[in-house]
Image: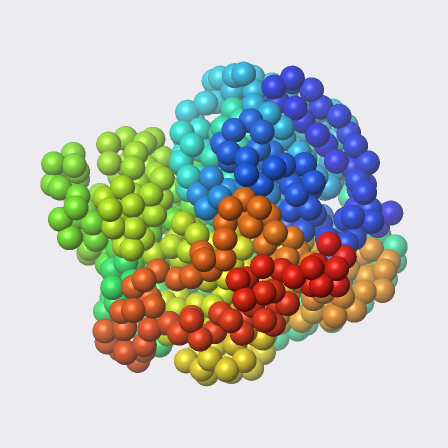
Length: 596
């Protein structure tokens, strides 16, 4: 058995029991692992209509066959559950070192069931599994929880935890590992908090077996060379991190500003990757077996902390009209400590600012704090108030859709399926907009990164305003991404690698003979089963849309001036290509073709 340990750890938090089950390897191979396998287990074991924060929902932590194995970026894992934010299937990806450690401990999947009566955490040291009291940890921030548990448990253990936001059931709560790595989106931290589960400590001592180390070394040598030679993975990301994109998107007129009221930010240079590297960077940081090292360790006053990524610089920067890098670094730090998704947190503050701008939020609601575009004075304080659910922060902790809907103006929320759209204005990148609208977890850029061909010219340069053929690119990227997420490697490798390379990777580790077409077909299968889950959960295809602003209000100025998103022209072609009917529902023929 190669690539998989063959074991599922099932933990019933209510009963305080655990058992080890055998992994169905045929099912695992059909869905690869990670995101795909987790979704399949959810479909088999959980009613899609379940209340996400009820004990009946399950929380799955799922590795991929590459996780913990000797391949580039083989350290990713997925958290799979039903999202309290969007109501869709949630599968949130994280890196760092924790996922590989779980694989070393001998497990492919952890399934958390029911709800503990009191706060607990779980300790896993190979075959030794304990459910331990966490009353003294409840309420602590992420770094403190991590420090306490590292001191208490075996040297080299890795910590996954929620912060106060997860405990307080914020719909945008993240699950954190290694202090500043996050399974960030869809509110998975709230599901963990709803189960009274504070943390999971893991230490493993056995690396997975491989069929032919020489073959793996040969494959790695070729793939690493391509990663190093690629302009994004070999130069841009190592030098500036993901923040390299700030100036690029701003120059194109597709950097959302002031809650998407504009698409260019006059002070973009101040929040750019170049400025971060020049003035604040201490060193690069890397996840398990990562040759790219896009992570940032930065100075924050007299502390050194995990630095903001592109999406965070945008969310607390141009989207809130803020050009103060120190304020953004502090806001990012407090998101990590609270356990909050930085995209949703910053976007929700931007929506709140527009609510204040338009008179819906009154001065007396602010408890003396500032809430204005361009005013960074209290941005970190708003993050803390969302985490602790204090004052107006209690409403904001629900995300921008529920916040704006509470004031009767949900159109001011820049979300798809109630999940905040990231840092690319789709009016200026039409393919990316189609991907946003059709994403199975809502507004998400990493379910099909059309920025690669539309902006970066990888693997070829597309006209970002063109509509023709974008449905083909969108489907291909979505299917490929589904398989990458399921393998347990980082999406960033796809700047340099293609479907055939991932097949080579899988074959070298698992001793199989998949082709690139097989990888895409498996991705298609995963995409369709996610869609079925959502449909059964009541997330109908009417929600495959974009915010009214992006469909009806042209970009007011800059290189993308005058554009709205042309989704109505693109969506029917996308549905047809997917083998779905005109209502966006997979046909029986399509499901039979995919073996679902």
